[in-house]
Length: 374
Length: 166
Image (cartoon, rainbow over all chains, first blue to last red; front, side):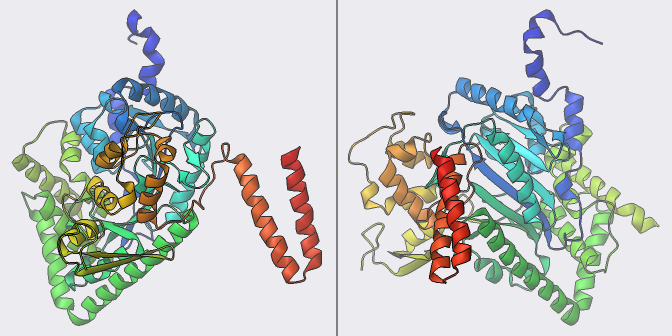
């Protein structure tokens, strides 16, 4: 075994917490994320996410910190993150400065870190659970952005996981907190509970029946925000939407979760009604649409991201409605892992747009072809 | 009526936002309404939070800084906070108390924190909240003439008060 050079001995423990060797990192990054699995509660609601924003009392917020101070805060938080466990499991910390641009892209595509974190990597990073159900971002907009992600509709369980980790961290950290304002955050839109609860929903039938704007338009007055698959400003490709609470102050965590849960339940109901209506009034057209999607996904040689998401959405509808057999990968895995960062990371080479479209088509074909042949 | 934001164009959009039971009325022209309501519209590409905050700040006459006072901890001034759409540190919340309060009210509708209390830091606070809850409960029990239960609650209040005092 290779000995570390003498001059590096002083920083051995630091290297260790920075996520170890490249191969170990690859293993961690390529692990299938728990949130991409399918549960019996995955129809319509693909995943549930909780984010808690926390800050240290005695440090300026990340956006005004010097690179030096950011690294000091990172060091402190990494030491704390090393001491805590999530359901008995240790987290692995990845410092963004150590990651290649493609590795950062993979983490963003898998929803484990935000694009904002990638933009200024100094003193920033994320601690991950092996199955990615926990991702704690360090020095993003706030010192700590604690996220938990689980598959299907299980907001309470997802919150419980985040809440327990938050308690464990608070044992060691002096959080910025006031009786009247709650947890203090860099942006006042998060002050109070610091909680952003969200669900990722798949609403193809509402889109096909032209009711999507009407249903989602009713959410803003209810204090809920709607975003696309990749957050603010991203398009709703693949009929995927993220619904989340906007108000974080003046409501308890339980109320926020209950409210989002209730509205999500209604949206699911609308989507299922739209699916039933399609089945009743336009079955042949529906079958044609989903089988065409399946055919293209099985045979296409070039697929853009946008094409792929659109077709995968229709295919998934066909699977949900019992028209098509299940592919070899889950819907979320196909959607996420056919993105440019993931494709290039798996193949370990840089690809131009045309090459990516070819590799994407191949990746997707492999998930569909075996069944078509059987 | 003139637009409450630009004070130039005629107001022809009425926005009523009810949050936590408090209704906020805004009378705006079309251009300003688009700017402010952007946050509520779906998928407006390029909409970023600082814009939204700046628009919010714009509605708050009392938030216009008379002179540039800086946060004693991080040195941010209020106009820097407005531009960044973010505060500089936890002390900014006190340093710019009234302005931040008015901003927070616009965003969240003016409630106080009723959520989680951190375990270690909030231990004393938790006792205080529990005491208030018990006292409310005691009053309710007395009103309902449930004296036996009231006695139990009263004893728990005493216990808690003695615990906190000793």
